[in-house]
View 1 (cartoon, helix red, strand yellow):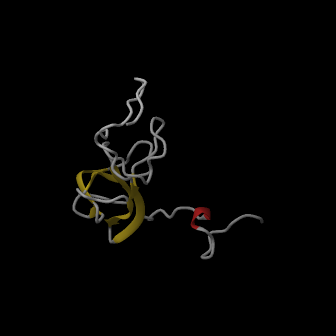
View 2 (tube, rainbow, N blue to C red):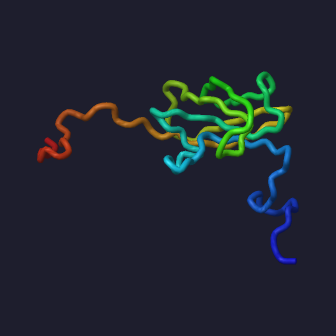
View 3 (cartoon, rainbow, N blue to C red):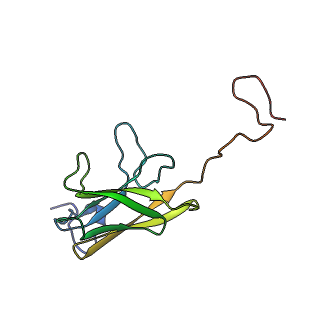
Length: 138
């Protein structure tokens, strides 16, 4: 029989997920917002999501050196395979880069990485051209 088997040497993508496998991610792509999975969204709501059988308050937590979490919720989620979630907030002063996100649940843990973009310029520099008014930069 041709095809991949779920042996020890096979890529993870070819393996069927285990029923008790713990997974974690930051954000979820939706029909309205594509490309946000695994990317912190400055100025927007960010959600840490995990799939962990039996996840419940007091026995499951998210952790990251650059995020803090609030408003944990537990149960099945719509449109994403997750049993727990929490709002994720960036620690002030965090530089752009790749950072870990870990969930610990039922004695198991899972870690992924997510990206944080550089902060956008907060104000227009003096002498900058203004879009649409015919001006040029000084």
